[in-house]
Image (cartoon, rainbow, N blue to C red; front, side, top):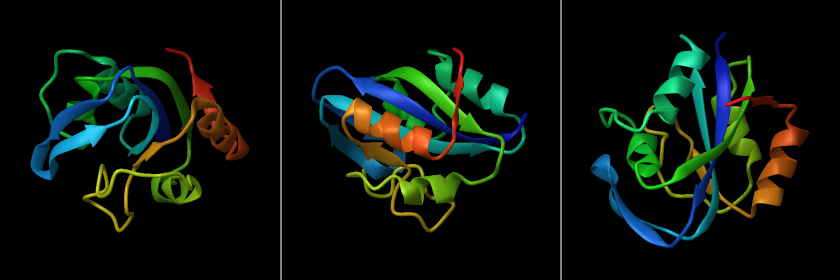
Length: 128
């Protein structure tokens, strides 16, 4: 299976994390939605994100070393940037979008607001 996905991530307390070349960024306690795509294998990409001991490759790898994935939602379509454009929430500038023209692929909002937006887009829940 290939497609696009959203990770719902919980940050339990305010923190600072070094995010690769972006440097040290501050993150507030709460929920974040990270938008990604895996056109060569969604299951493999999700397994990578869920692994705790991994080589830091993407911005999200650094973030996940200090935060926890709570839910995963997916679509079998290649619409990563379209999904990111639909999430009209505060965002972390330049996060996860070094290969496109989006402003960000990481968004911050209350859990219920994230969930409402995700369901509105017709995404399906991935069972962890």
